[in-house]
Length: 289
Figure 1: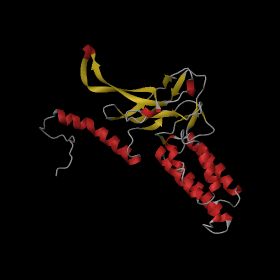
Figure 2: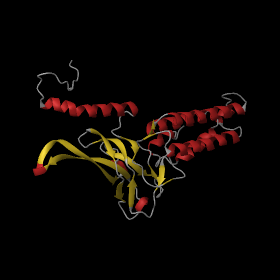
Figure 3: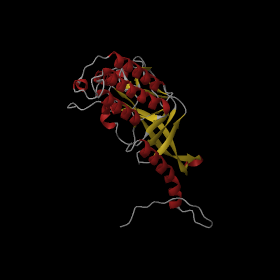
């Protein structure tokens, strides 16, 4: 049995620089970016590393990062930023956008349209004077709206998706956020309100009825408060991907449901409906649970 192999570039005195050698150089960045994505979020084809935020106010509800753009605007404005993207032919690029991007809403309904705003790398051969093709390509960022059923194509990087209420757009789909990001701060404030609910809660719920951790209600409240504090500490201490935050909230929901399940329900209410939750739908338990 033969194992898969690939070329790597290794210069040496007198060696011939053939086409396969040049291809090995070109392929190295693709392998590096693929390895990074696989380590942070296996299976995805792209992720926003910084910026590329939809302009608009933060919505009062919905999953983390939900925006409410100006309903009277003629289009969407996206801030500068950077992302790992995949082209139509499967190559990965580190794309940096230095200027604000703009795209018009696809219909007269404006922000009330149903769809997903995606970023697509547009790759074209570079040419010099006289139309001569040179050994490089130009990569540009292109914005557009697609139907939700098409948004999972590997060459589309979702930037924002309509949540279904005709006003708000979820933006935390495939992103890295630093602890200082404003959306992280808003999520931490939500945790503060949940913790206040923990200490106001009365002894009740299936876990209390089964006496899972005894008949001292303060013990249940302490477990729930400690779970919230632990989640806060994680978000405040390191950059996190959307997948990290989904896993964190899912684990927090499970911990709360095993202590003060009234607050676990309040956490789910912050996320909203499954239809508009995007990746955060994984936090919502199956109907049979």
